[in-house]
Length: 167
Image 1 (cartoon, rainbow, N blue to C red):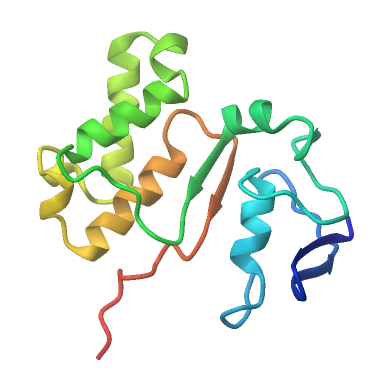
Image 2: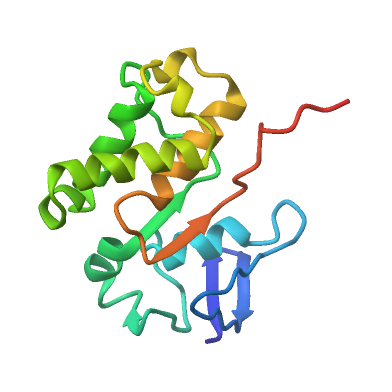
C-alpha cells in the first residue's frame, strides 16, 4: 500500500498500490526504469521502501523478511549461477537452502529436483556445468531455481530475457 522508493532526488516507485492473489499470475509491465525491479527488490527485502507497506502471505516485508524468504522463490533479472555446478547440483543446492531435504525423504526431494528439470526442459542437461549452458538454458535454470524447494510465492524478474533469439 502506497509503496514508495526514493534514491536521493529520484523516485523509482511512487505510491504503488497493488493486490496479488493466491493461485493467480500477476505481471508488472513497463518501460525500462519504470520501477519493476525496484518493486521486486522491496518485496524480497533487498532494499527497504522509503515509505508505504507491503505484505506477502500476511507477513510484513520490513518486519518479517526472514520468514518471507523461507517461502519465496526469486528469479533475478540477471542469472546468479555457479559456473562449476551442474544443473542438478544447482537445484539440489537451492532446494537444500529452502529446507526441502529436511521436509521430504531424500528420494522424494530428488524426484522434485528431477521434475524441476523436466518442467523447464533441462533434464537432458542435468550433468552439464552452468558455464557450458546457453543463455536461454541459464534463464531456464534460474526459473527452475525460483520454483524449487516448495516456494509458495515466486517472483520472476524478466524471466524470458535471453530465451528468445532476435530475428
